[in-house]
Length: 180
Image 1 (cartoon, rainbow, N blue to C red):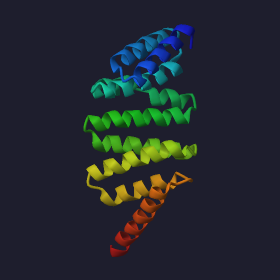
Image 2: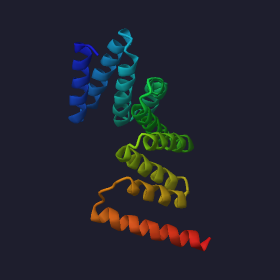
Image 3: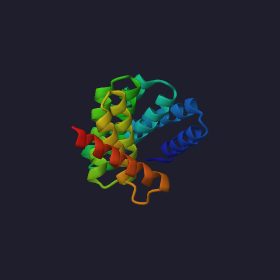
Image 4: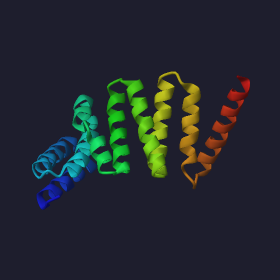
């Protein structure tokens, strides 16, 4: 990544932090153009993922999904599993906003599996919570409870609240499975 690309990336992040999503979108878009010209496809894929998050904030889920096309594959080819999983998570978020819930759920699940593969507990926990939320919305209450419980399993240093919730979820799941 050259100096101008780095400057645009930094401007994009700065604008995002200030919730100036239009400026962030402009900076990331310009950065992507420069990176594409330089044939730095890995960095361009990362910027596309940043842009997708901004586009979701701007209520443009179709554009967010479009900008993400094949970024997960670019990371997969580079053997960058963490960024591949993140790209899939971003794709799932756009699909969810578009109301494509079964596809979003499946994509989140693939993302969570990749995070598990590389032992990325924090990102996996966040993804599992999103899976649980989607499962609830699609009428899969039991699976939602199990996903939520699994998300709490990822955090080795649980707060008192998380310990109580984990215990509650475990006993609730136990009661449900013994009724069946």
